[in-house]
Image (tube, rainbow, N blue to C red; front, top):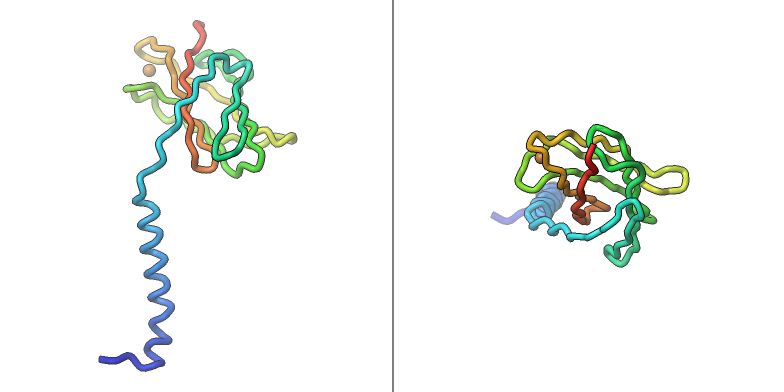
Length: 144
Ligand SMILES: [Cu+2]
């Protein structure tokens, strides 16, 4: 069965949509980029990281204690989306995902409140996602 021109004309948009769906599915299936581990010995001082050819600075304002708000700041010029997630290795600490919003100076900030760990651990992992690229920073909360 040969398609005439009209049938071809009608089928073309569907073929295009099918191709786009296939491409999106392929995009989703790609393994996510592993997070890059970054050591920042003093988050109060801040650290800088080179990510995707961009210089990014990050740090924390306020005391790093549980149940007490502190601020995470990220200087990532030109970034569109910055999120921070807080986890513990091998332990479900609940849903601690924050979206950082740029302040008037363009510094991305979020106010964070961490929960208490039922087993008394203080070793946290901050996972920062900047435009889809992830870095992971271990830190320890101060004793209350
Ligand atoms: Cu815990």
